Length: 321
Image (tube, rainbow, N blue to C red; front, side):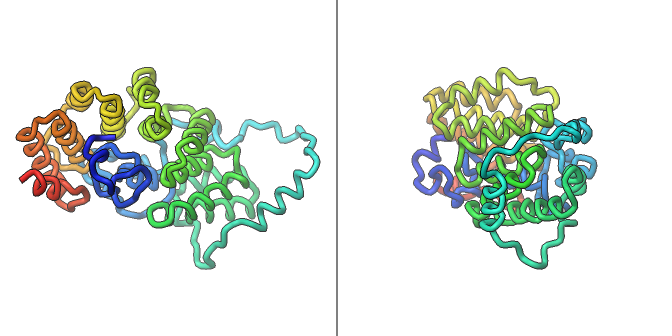
């Protein structure tokens, strides 16, 4: 976590008051922007960088995991299972399932599963019609509640997982919801499972940040080193770089934290939220190193790159003045 998060109590882990900040906090805003795109179809989520510099994600990337644009539905959601194989159920299994259904969180009557990304709905077709509809509704509720009520969102996501645990996008949903709720261990486990099912790099930035949340910054850094990042978008590389920089600061390696961001080539001429976040994180790392004039300049760059004031760069500038 960046040093300003250490010194400002409002930036504590899992505290959503910090979601407007552009640093590498585990409760930072990148999780909201980048991961709800897997569920909601039509929201304008200001995902600059995911679909180029247009400020809106390219339609062909809707619902697709970071760096997984070439995934094939035939390899996901358990579609290769031999449906003729009958497995013996352990004693009490049916009763457990019934009890879980009874305890499922309520669903509003006006939910429309067509608000989900079409690719997500496609993935759910491996389920029965009744079950796929229920799973879709719980996934939609998880996405809608993730920012304002992360605990209830996680309940919905867990319910979807209980109903469809062999569908990769459902496991990913559960991982993202757990991340929002500050359940780092559960989030990491679910995101790893989703990655095994679907292939590709998965949500590397979130997985690395979970390692930080578990007090393992070295593993966050190692994850970024050992994975093939060639398929990641620029925006995803920026998010991963911000997490790595934060992990370096967790270890007291401020100079290395700065270098991790410099390797991404911060560019004040690029007006997009991902680039604004990079400028902000760079300013934060410079500030941690005591390089105040440079930090002020990069906070100013971040503010200029963020006309909608999604970040709090202007507040940080005022503090430095």
